[in-house]
Every structure is written in C-alpha cells, then in structure tokens.
Amino acid sequence: MPPLTRIVLVGPPGAGKGTQATRLAGKLSVPHISTGDLFRANISRQTALGKRAKVFMDAGHLVPDELTIEMAKDRMRQPDAENGFLLDGFPRNVWQAEALDELLKTEASKLDAVLDLEIPEGELIKRIAGRRICRSRSAHVFHVSYSPPRKRGVCDLCGDQLYQRDDDSEETVRKRLEVYCTQTEPIIDYYKTQGLAVTISSLGSVDEVTRRALEALKREDDDE
Image (tube, rainbow, N blue to C red; front, top):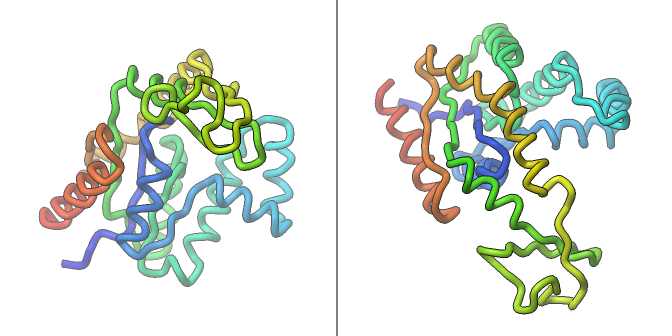
C-alpha cells in the first residue's frame, strides 16, 4: 500500500500546527503548503492573485475563499506536489473543504488523511499568552513557564526588553479560538463522515507529537 501523502493538518492556534507541519512534510518528503506562505509568495511575485489578495490583507480583512482556493490550486499543480502535499491552514472552513474535494476530483486525486491536533483550551491559552518576544531585531522568543529568561522581562541573549505581542494576550487568544471553533472546527466532522479524520493529542514534546502523528497516519494506511 503506498504511503499517505495527501494530508490536511488541522488544529487550533497554539497546538503546534506550524512546527508539526514542517516536520511531517520533511519526513513524508512532500511540500508543506501553508496559506501564509501562499499569500506571501504571490504578493512578493506580484501575481494577479497576489495583487488582489494584498488589497484585502492591507485592509485587515481575510482573503476571500475564492482567492485562497485559486492560490492553493496553483500551488498543488506545481511539480514538487505531484506525489503529495501537506496542507496547513487550508481548508479553513467547510466551504473550502468542499471546494478542495471538487478540485482534487478534477485532478483524479483525493485526500489520504486529515490529521487533527487536539489540545485542552487551558493549555492553548497558557502556551500563547505566556510568550514573550525580545524587542531587538533578532526577536528571540521566551516563555514565562516553559523557557523563562534568567531575569524577568530581559532577553538572556542581548539584554533587551521582552514584551507580549497584542496577538498573544489572553483576550485575543480567546477570540482567535472562538473563530477557530466557529469556522474551522466543523471541517473535522465533515472529514469524519468521509472516514479521513484522525485525532491525536498535541500535548508533550515536539518529538512525541511528531511520533504520534506518524503512527496515526500509518494506522490509517494499514486500514485502507
């Protein structure tokens, strides 16, 4: 049975999705395709899609579903994604999930698995709200619980001041989680009805979560 190579990674902010996406894509030898990277690449290359997306981003709005889907379609058709990909941040809602299914059908392809990173809300808030960033250009990252500086509020490496980003405040984190629960979490049930979704805990070390994810994907492969 061929390995699972067309994968969607789902998880709330703070679940370690970006870190796991990079690690899993490397171990599976497929490109990591994130919406953030798609937007940045199209904007930097000044593509027609990028110019349209920039208008929304500059205004502080989400990039419309139609634009996101067109960018994802273009990226998945590139040669390095011919044998698979790991999608991160797309689809972000059920409408995009349905559009992805239709897109893959036109390519005579389909998803192999949807990996859902699960973590208690309290731990998510602790992870994000505890981050502190150095004000220097290097922007070193610390955490008040997991990797605290030797001196409170001061970067160990350069001695500059540490601060909490507005996006990392507890109030903002809770709002981000509300958006995730309303818009993105429903795609997990959507994929469960297709027998594609597999949920794992994202508690523990980065290595532990990666190992858990690979084992879950292998079990899905064995069940085919």
